[in-house]
Image (cartoon, rainbow, N blue to C red; front, side):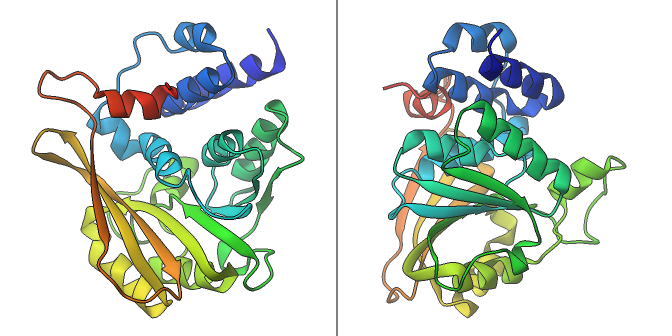
Length: 266
């Protein structure tokens, strides 16, 4: 087994919610057979979307045409977004930031495994004080924890709790992103629909103008609990472009659009 498939297998065993992201990475690297063997029978479901793993795939696709060459992933976790966006564009450089050293170390290991360490890095830091110069980034992506501290059930597993519960508020995330972005820089976010009013207020206060949103439907007429947003620093306020993505058709099968996102099909 080569190093790439070894890392993929390790991630599949350690984080079963990452199956679709792992499938996509395998496909991008011509490892489809290996991916099938590792995650045979894996099914996409709304529960998977809620886990935050499918969210990363949707966000990577949503941000795939980001402008410029230098970006960041704030709250990078094990680096799935870094890998997808770096593999999707060879001109990109990216830095992942996570407050957990275990997550940053995992992201660094994954970058090395896919020979991306020259264009990608991961650092352990609070993204409110990340090691970026003001107005130095072309784009930022973020798939942050969805729940405010002190709200909802807290997992006894420290890693899972950290993935679900904010260590910084949505307002702090948006303010930090605005500070790091160049004028005209893009901010891409996936979050819960129930937090939409908080997010819109935070974007407004940070002078990040929403320009595009994508609503996710798990089936015809059934909205998933997440949505995606693109905002631009300093852009004039105008009508926001609205998009929809349907994950499964009335027959219960994945739509062609979503299969392309999951499996990197042409």
